[in-house]
Length: 164
Image (spheres, rainbow, N blue to C red):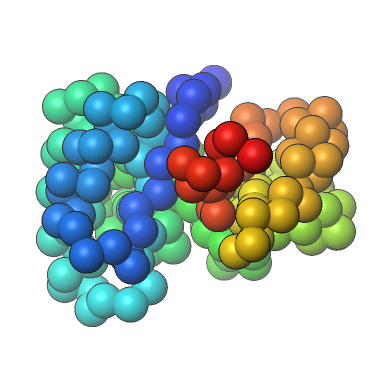
């Protein structure tokens, strides 16, 4: 079964002032094995163009590429796909890998049968709140033990949080 590589799972930050492609290249230089493109604030055409550029950078570096939420684009680019919370029912055979982001353990437990049947990986987010409080480490451990899927922690992780 195909799976995302273990290691650092980077997510683009639409709030940064920097160049998006430079941000992705920096993530890869710092060891990201997977890059997720997420931006809920821009128009579809810009999102599509950015996704194509990021996918090209990832492909050249041998890094997995994941699109957040835009399944027609993920299908067109034949990329991996992740949804937040309650995704539509999709034909998984059309995609490489499909993931879901669970924001709490009760969401996972309530939807466990569907998640285990339809998804290839699970992302837990956010791992830290905006004050640096780590409230999901136990959740990540429980999910990793229960899920039988690769589990990634994402969101709220900054360089400062790594040293707390």
